[in-house]
Amino acid sequence: MESQINPAQEIPQSEIIGEIEYMLARIGTFRAELELEIWKKIASGEDTVEKIVSNEEWDHAGTQVLLDAICSIRLLKKEEVPYSLVPESESYLLPGKSTYKGDIVLNEYGWDGNGKFAEAIRSGKRPLQYDATTKEAVILWNADYLRSWVFPESYLETAKKL
Image (cartoon, rainbow, N blue to C red):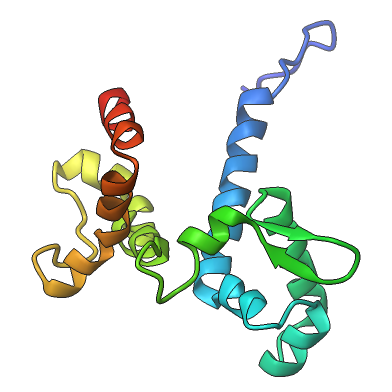
């Protein structure tokens, strides 16, 4: 028997679902920006869609949407035509800097592993994405440890909350 919706019955708002969808879109945008090294491109002078598209041969519309989306999460800013870095992106999202957090975000948070969360619950085994004992893995954590040395009170407060 098929259930029928009673027209008099109120359909609940989907605010919670909408918030989750928004978070997922932001995470997807952030991941794409890291993989494409957008902040590095902006810092090196590729500060317009046209410059990036001509150098990378990317889709113009997609590049425009991606850059504007990252502006909406306040990790890039746009004044008239050129895009520019915000202090957070300059400090933490430029590859090669000692405070760079892009590698840890891309590796530690196990994007593919997170997609297997239900499997991990069923089996009791965490899906590992990399060997955390290698020298390369230790380098991923440098930005976090450096922050703890520079801002110990902030780091301790965050650790306390966790």
